[in-house]
Image (cartoon, rainbow, N blue to C red; front, side):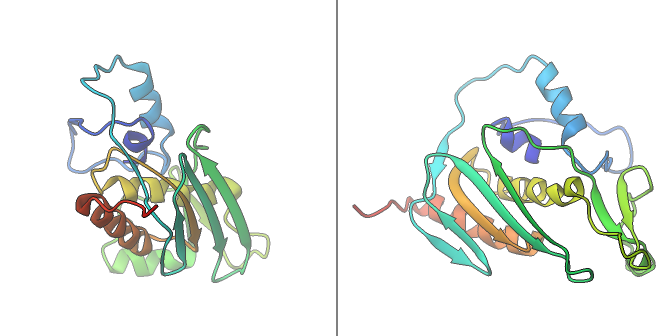
Length: 191
């Protein structure tokens, strides 16, 4: 969904020849390449929605802006490694694999989760090795996740400055609902 959002595509049919959507490499690189190499017929420009005023929800802050910018602060709860990431609409998204700790895999498997994970599409980390921590590219996956989650609003293009503190899908979806509600209510900034 992040690929569709960054390419300002709001309607697309994807046919899957298999039992589930492939996890690919946990990034947008493969799908983005396919979309950008194809001839896409546009019937109209994607609508834009500028977040009208400052909003804060669960450690996320949004400011009005004429561009889309994302600042993301991550602190790994297990290793306490800290990472600060930045992305703006005019820059490419760095290919980024998803990641997980090998110790968590049995738990996820028991819960019938992580079925598409394997050594080719996931950066596998271990707490037994002190140097093991999510790589810069793995952390960048959090921005890809955010863009994909915000795309669920069905608003073709959103502008604002987003500050994300320890982003996750739950918080992403709460902010998406907030942005969607502002959009559907036609809230505008007071002058």
